Every structure is written in C-alpha cells, then in structure tokens.
Amino acid sequence: MLPLNLTTLLIGLILTKNKRKIPDDDHVLRYVPWARLRRNGNGEIIGISGDSFRLREVDKGKLSVTWIEYFDQTGGDQLVQAIRTMRARVC
Image (cartoon, rainbow, N blue to C red; front, side, top):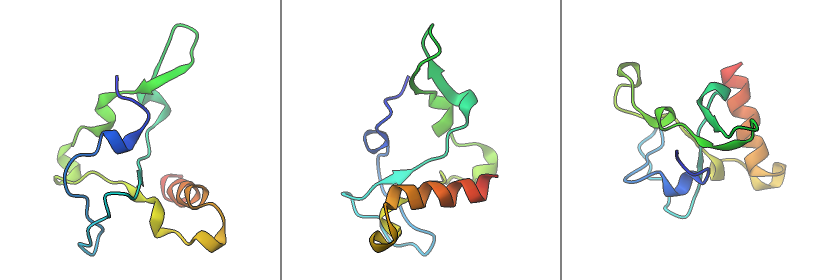
C-alpha cells in the first residue's frame, strides 16, 4: 500500500514536456482509476495500489503526471484546475 501523499512517492528528476525541471517544492497529480485504489473491509479508501506507479511498455519510460503549479492561481484553485484538465483528457 502506498500513502495518498504523492510527494513522498516521487523520487528523482521530474521534467515537463519541454524538459523544464519541476521545482522540488511544487506538486504533481496522477490519475489513478477506481480499480487501483486500496480499500478496507468497509469499502473506505485507505491507499493507492503500487501498480498505479509501475511503468508499462507503452509508457516509454515516463510516468504521466499533471504539474499543479502550472495552472494560473488567479483563475481559482490550482488543484481544481488540474483535476478538471485531467478529467477532460481521460473522459
């Protein structure tokens, strides 16, 4: 089981598509499908399956994440903007 705080999971260099380093104090978000969430006997979410972070052959050695601080603070909550963007790409 992995903790819900992703900043403790991501080790090493994280780069944007244009090869800019994401600052260490910034945050990233990863889409995790419902089937990859770990649940207790009551069905409550208790963590994330490690499979959610395992690279597959189609990933070409890169894990896809969304950089939260990329989004404009003046347009509202950056996390909400990041989630909406991710949902638009996934759905």
